[in-house]
Length: 385
Image 1 (tube, helix red, strand yellow):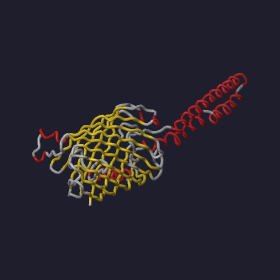
Image 2 (cartoon, one colour):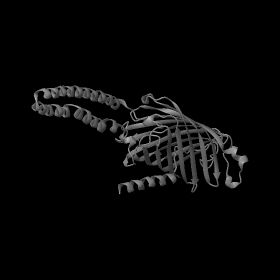
Image 3 (cartoon, helix red, strand yellow):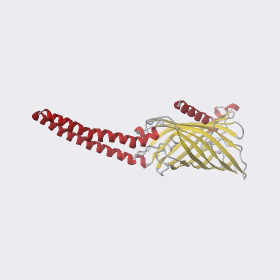
Image 4 (cartoon, helix red, strand yellow):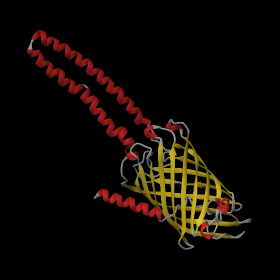
């Protein structure tokens, strides 16, 4: 029954993702196209209330245990737009709302599990186990001598050997200090440290708070600059870095080679493809809830955006240059990723969207960041008023 409920919740989250939009991915303009609604004339101002409901999931199939996260977000806020010359625009988008978390919470790309004190305890455990093992060997050796005495003095000493040798071995040797302490360590040390991140399934955990604040400057239809801040407040226990405010900052520059008006349903052909081609350079930097600097990555991704009737499709991909924080003890690497984004307006006030971002990690960091794929999917709906 529990499995069925979890499966239903996971399926519901996936369905919500296919019906909703991601405010952090949607800009006022989509990669040089006209995805932000009607063009605002020079000198005019517009304030638009927006509500976005999104479901999203992450699947780190390259890690031991294949950890997953799911969440359903409700974002409420405004988009403020100022019209500029040359069909340009300056916009500020600000939203905030609850994030209902299943499994583990969404985290910054490439985060690994900090060892810290738990790792040191693991070393102490090894030393303690080794000392007890040596003690066991010494004690066993003494008992062996008593056994030799038994050969000389008879059966009674043999009984003493059983009582004081073997029993003492159980009480003071490997069984108590080796197995018991080892089990203790597993229960309260290493497993607790990794349990939340590598547990199977996606049980409900809590409701966190997610925010989004972005400023976008687009001087014309081809060039756009954006800075964004994505705060995320963990409201309770269950995450490795504890309760508190996570922070992620992004900087993006996009250059479109054409005007973005490619619609294959209206007769555009291959000769019009250049109008939908763009290149995007984006850097993201992240800090965890205890202020640990997680690292940063830079995507240099060319892409292609086009329409099929009302459906907007954007494809992009390329190298991801990832530099983890010093907390991880790991070196930088170059991954490869891509993204598929879909957006479909139901009315001029309601838009559905979905996205899928697969990334291939090129270095084998073992359980902390194995070689292979991880995926992030999301879908939602945005209402503007």
